[in-house]
Length: 247
Length: 337
Image (cartoon, rainbow over all chains, first blue to last red; front, side, top):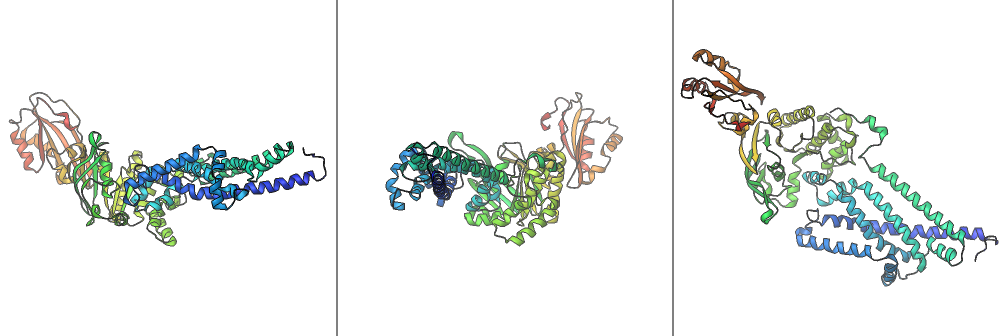
C-alpha cells in the first residue's frame, strides 16, 4: 500500500507517469510506423489480387495472383483471430530473434505490430474497395501503370477512410500496449499493474486511465480533423452557397 | 483512323456466357465524329472499351492510326493509350484533386514536368471554358462543368482520338447541347477524330458525321449520315426521323419520301398535287438539320392503289428523291416507330 501523504509521493507519481507515458508513446509510435509500412501494401495487395483486381495476375500469372490472395487472406485471418495475450506469449521466440530480448518497450513493439498489421490491412482493404472502379478505368485510359494507379488514384482517393482506419488501429494498439505491461513491456499499462493493482494505489490507476483517455481523445480529434481536411466529397454547409449551379 | 475488324467479346463462360460483341467491324475516318447508337445492353460500352483495350476482345483486331493495338505488349499499349483520350458518363474525376489537378493526371502519368503540366492544364481548361475553375474540386462543380474537366483531362495529352462513353447521358438537355457543341468545336479546331456511343438519337443528329447502329452485339448498319438517309429501309434513317403511326384510309397508297441535300427546299408536294391533280394528305413529317444540311422524311397518303399512283411515284423518284411505298392502304407497318 502506498501512502499518498508520504513525502515524495507526488514527485514520484509524476516521474513514474512521465516515464510510463514516454514508453507507451514510444512503443505505440514505432508499432504504428511498422504497421503502416507493412499493412498498407498488404491491404492493397489483398484487394488487388482479388478477381478482376489490379494485381489479379502478377507477372502475367493468374494462378500466382490467386495463390497470393489465398495466402494473404489466411495470414490476415490468423493474425486477427488469435487473442493478443496468447499471441504476445507465442511470439516470444520471434521477438527474441528480432530484438534480442522479450522484455521492455522495444521488445513490446513486435507483438503490437504483429497484431495491428492484419487489423490495419483489413481497414486498408475496406477503404480501397470504396474507390469507384471508374477512376481506375479513367487512369488506365490515360496509360497509367498499376503502380501509378495505386499511388495516384487508389491511395489518395481513399485517404479519409484510411486515416480514420489508422486511427482505429492506433487506438487498439494503445489498448494492447497496456497489456504488454503485464509481461514487463513497460508503459502506462505496467504503471497501472505495478502500482494500481499490485500496490493498491487508486491514484496511480485513475491517473493512468485519464492519461490514456487524453491520448486517445487527442488522436481521435487529430484523425477526424485530417480526414475532413482530405475529404473533398460532401462540402460543409458554409461553402454550399459558393457551389455554382450553372453549366 | 479507327479500324475494328471482326471483333468478338464474350463475358462469362459455359451456359452463363453472354456475347457482348458479335463479329463487329467498324471504320472511322480521320477527323470525323462517328456515333454508335444502341439500346442499353446492346454492347456499346464494351465496343468503346475495346477500342483502347480496356476490354480486350476475344478475337479480332483493333487498329488506331495505323497501329494494331491488339498486337501490342502491355507497355506499348500504355503508350498508345496516351494518344487516345476518353471521357465517361459519370466523369470519373478524382474527388481529391482540383479541376487542374485532374487535368494534370494524364500528364503526370506521362512524366511531363511540373511547369509544363501547369501551363498545359491551364491552356486546356481555358479551351473548355473553365479557366476560372482551375482551383475548384469536383464536388464544387456542376455536371456540365465536371464533364468539361473530363474532356480537358482527355485532351491534355494531345490525343489523336477522343472516345466518348455516353458523355452526355447524365446531363440535362441544355447542358448536353453545350457539351456536344464543345465536342464539335474541338473536333474542328484540333482535327480530332471522335468516336462516341450514345442511346440518344439527338446526339447523333446534333454532331455526328457518321453513325452505326448496334443491336445485340451486332452492327446492323453503318455509314455517313448522308448516305444512310438515302438508303432505302435504313433503320437509322427511320429513327432519325420518327413519323409515328397514323392509320390511313383503306384503299389508298401511303408513301414515305426522304429528302436530303438540295431536294429539301423544293416544293415537292405542291408540285405533285398540281401536276397530277392528287388530293395529297400529309400523314407525318420530320425535318432536321444534319451535318449542316436540311434533311427529312414525309409520309404522304395518295388516293388509290400503288398501281394507280405509279406515274407520280416514278416522277418523284425521277427527281432524285427516295420514295418508299410503306402501305397500300390495308396495313401500315408501324415498325419504324
